[in-house]
Length: 297
Image 1 (cartoon, one colour):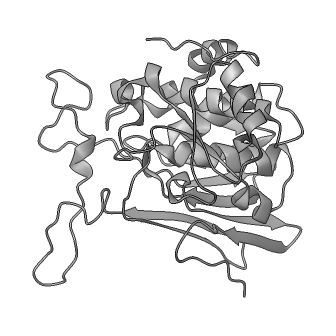
Image 2: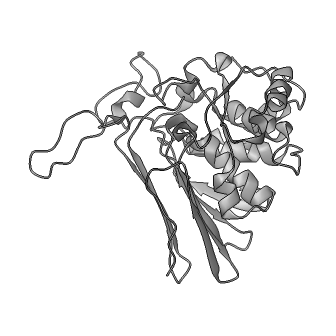
Image 3: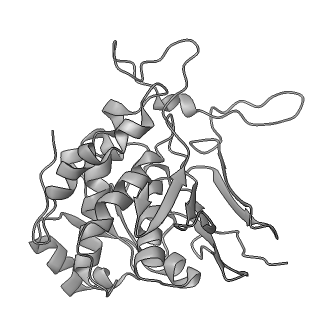
């Protein structure tokens, strides 16, 4: 998917990674302010993520057509619905988990964007007796409604939230490797990192460390954001510029139901980013993570 003069790649369905691409395509066609501290910047990106993701429970499955999900003719009406002044209507949160993300770029400028997760906490709560490996509970992504495209069944793969990404320049060279933990919030976090990095030209530290927003509730499983898409709350991280009284009031006037959390809150993802510039690698690890680092060679 092309956005901000770059090609952005991610893993196909049954991953929710298509939401990163869809959100970036929608946002790239909006008139984003050059100042990321402007509440309008948060409003437009949040609306892009919501328009991209609200119907994920209905359309995502292991048989979903990824190209169709990010087709411009499907996304164009969603972009057109977004207003800078008010929350857009829809066509119809992140909690504790156990996810690890790793980005690596070698001397030949080959990049790896790797994510591993047990889903919720310790997964299903069972361990293999020989290797003591905990088994995941990604089966929570299945739907039990008969006829649903993600209906549980033998040989099926459940929709999942893991969405690592790679960015290429127009000439095909590697620009960046990026990813995050965060359940349903992963594409929302990556959209904000990409907007700061590709659209505003922010360095990796600013792209990763700046305050974020996310759709969801103060308390949730991390996998239920889109259960009631017309009733999602826009949560603001405490150190974001829009977390001020004026910023919250501004977003409220645009029609958002706004809640705030503390600075560098765990529920806003642990993103990591490596960028390649003129033979130099630049990277940043998320300060929200208990463990994590950026290391060179």
